[in-house]
Image (cartoon, rainbow, N blue to C red):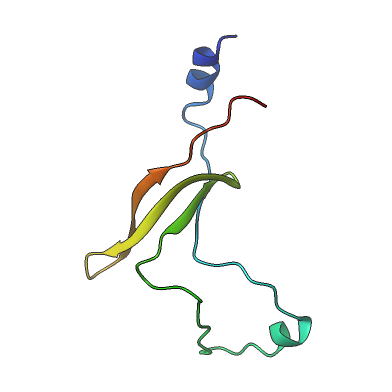
Amino acid sequence: MTVEEAVARFADMPLQFEFELDRRNVSLRELASLRIGQVLPLPRSPAEKVSVRVADTPFAAAEIVGDGTEVQVRITQLVEVDNHR
C-alpha cells in the first residue's frame, strides 16, 4: 500500500484535537483543595500562542480569537514533520 492509499483509506478517521494553554505540576494537597468557582492564574499573556496537538502529537501553534459569542483559535504556524526517524 502506498502512502497516498493509506491516507485515502483513513482520511475520514476522527482525530482528537487538543488546544493547550498550560501544563503544571501540583501536589495532591493542592489538587484536593480546588473548589468550584476558584480562579487559576495562568503564567501567560492572552496574546501568547496556544499549542495545538492532534492525537497527542504537536501539530500547530495558534492564537485565541473570538467573535463575541464563542472562543476560537486561528492557526498561525504548522509544526514541521521530522521524516528522518
